[in-house]
Amino acid sequence: MEFCVEDSTDVHVLIEDHRIVFSCKNADGVELYNEIEFYAKVNSKDSQDKRSSRSITCFVRKWKEKVAWPRLTKEDIKLLKKVSTKRPPPAMDDLDFTTTVVSCCPAELQTEGSNGKKEVLSGFQVVLEDTVLFPEGGGQPDDRGTINDISVLRVTRRGEQADHFTQTPLDPGSQVLVRVDWERRFDHMQQHSGQHLITAVADHLFKLKTTSWELGRFRSAIELDTPSMTAEQVAAIEQSVNEKIRDRLPVNVRELSLDDPEVEQVSGRGLPDDHAGPIRVVNIEGVDSNMCCGTHVSNLSDLQVIKILGTEKGKKNRTNLIFLSGNRVLKWMERSHGTEKALTALLKCGAEDHVEAVKKLQNSTKILQKNNLNLLRDLAVHIAHSLRNSPDWGGVVILHRKEGDSEFMNIIANEIGSEETLLFLTVGDEKGGGLFLLAGPPASVETLGPRVAEVLEGKGAGKKGRFQGKATKMSRRMEAQALLQDYISTQSAKE
Image (spheres, rainbow, N blue to C red):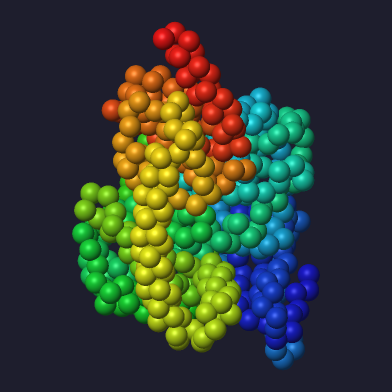
């Protein structure tokens, strides 16, 4: 086969039990690869003729300046001879994987809908002979992808197998093409490798132990066993991890048997109760060696950059270190820059003056709010006196204003102070939501308050002749008024 890429960088040779993969990046930074499949294993005890018919002789050489020149190391040659150690699939955005459907059973998936409410989806739990989709575990969310272009909505681990949830059935025994959602996978790789790096550096610099971590949708958090951290500690960790990224340290994966003495020297939080098979160890050269089942970059340079956003108070007297890795930093910068441009346009000043400009606006707003509150109080007193002296006083007194708040309504009720008349006050947009207050004879208010809240499709509470709350349908205010009028008429008839 030929594998020629002009101005290539990051040349790698990956040996697996079924193939050898050559990869590199071109001048534009796009990752390219080619492969040789091993269709049968070669046994050293086979005859010369049999070995020749089942062998592949591969010559790798540099034949042109600035063209990829991957070299096979002694370790690679040993692996080619042994052909026994499985390794992760190559991290390629066009990675496809052909496998066989083992089973497909009806199932349900509880998920969160677009409105934030939980939904239950009906579908199928598909088990494959093997898979390249990572099931949730080790603090890392599951992969997304497709099986024969059918979306996989969740991948979970059950013992040694992975369950793939789809909404379309697949025939057991059929061959299928599995494809990884590379954007999601690479994002998880960047965040997970970033966590390993930060954890190792925090431990090395300040003996801060990681107790757990969370890979969130927009940011990630590492829980450290310390009640607090100084700004200097955070800055030192950020500086150190980015230095190691610039050093382009390799990240490799090894598999150890349970009885291997080296297992005792590897960091980790233990194995699941249902774990079977070899132990997977992720090693950052010269920095960290840790048990992990997750997906990782092959070199720290793939992290690009790590930004620590700060710390938050955690549980049990611990501290959460908030961070972003790789592409998430770029997206965060893009959002921040967009916000900065918008503020510059709104505040009519440069970014360096934003904070001072906002402080001035806040001070002005506080003064205006105070003046507005005083005016509303004066207005409430004036309205109360007007209502009290009105010729229509008695029975039910009704008032609605678009402007106002709970204090405004309570001042009016306090100024009127009558327990003989029902007072129904509302504030807010007549076509939207708002606030309401019902005051008057305690027995009447206790009876009518919940009914008024129900008509206005709101909630409220009250005591001692006063019931107030929030309404979602102020447009039904006239229905509430009619309810009160009918009640007064009925009471008058009884008297």
